[in-house]
Length: 314
Length: 206
Image 1 (tube, rainbow over the protein chains, first blue to last red):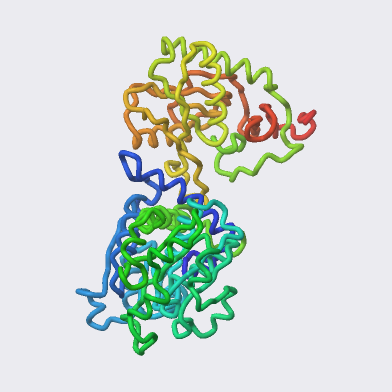
Image 2: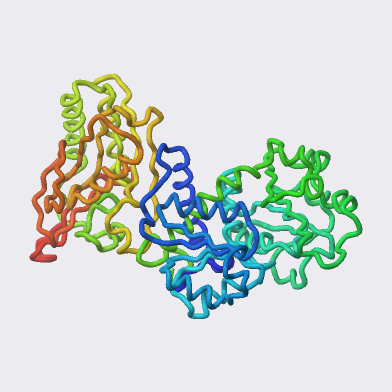
């Protein structure tokens, strides 16, 4: 039985829709005077962050606290991790402290998988982003945001634009959106498309202007310069001329098309400020929805006697 | 026992299985008459419709609350706010089953502070659902009073909770199960009882 959320690809359509429906109910909590539910009272959630993160960590922390879980934040800086402790020893420590769930962000792709399957601990593992691999809760909150704006995602067209190569968000989104029946087009310069993208079951394009008028969602990706160890494009200016979303390009979108960005944004590079702050932009709403979706995931994994999602038998 | 209204304690409630409903206790006319009486009793006790809020407990408490409000509107010519209150996360058996799907909680725009809240559910059994509902209410506001209306009271309370307004008192044994079906959810109005101690021989017509 699975009790982890490691990859967006592990979710069946029923699982994904259950998470979205649960998030929809939990979203109303933000409007109540007491923003707290007792579902995870007495459970401990550890945020284990080996890589810098603001919004994801805060989002998970808020989600766990609103479900009344006890939250322990554990980041690489200023802890024994910076003294060279191995992932195994860290995991054993957390197990000894009685963690029920570990939310892990790691610079190495596959670290959450190792944590979940090495037999070091019994806690549930939630992948909060591993290297250039996956970021399933981001994909869930993106799908949730699309679903709130567009309804059923069956047959909807989603363009994911930019640095696909280094983007765990793109991979998780492609997997989840396929599961939900949407058609994904990756738009990027050839140097920023990963090897093996043919196996992703998505379309690819090098021409942003051709894709924009047909799409229902434009998701701009951050250019991850910190991961770039070579020249993937000549200049920033050339990149934004060909793959940046500006006011002129935004004008070619259909009326209902929404603009998304997982954050943090490089304003002026992949997206201009006027687009980021426009009516079409749902970037701030993505953050709000992130808390609701992460509450749904934590509730469904930890709330009952056994997880309600990701199981093999359902 | 909001979701299924059928099952003796912690078994997961399966959807209604045609043919196993057993003996009909209330037919559609009986249900209508019971709800009409409940509506009048609530209004009488409250001396009118002022400051009333009806909160149905999903799933079948919600259509019942709507029906009661419709009947009140006829009598008092006042619209009584209706909402729903999901108690899933407040249940004492949350940890004993797989995580359950959440159901809608919709609090009417006026809120519940200072109002008289009438909780509406289909079957009152152990009382644990109502305890959870009282806890849930506590996180939403502070009503002036909380009352309880149920279509069927089948007894076997495990907590000191009683209903203020009851459609029908239905003495049952613990091996029996009571199923409430409503047109809005199940396409038909009926309250049935099944699983009697002498088994299928007494089940009679379905």
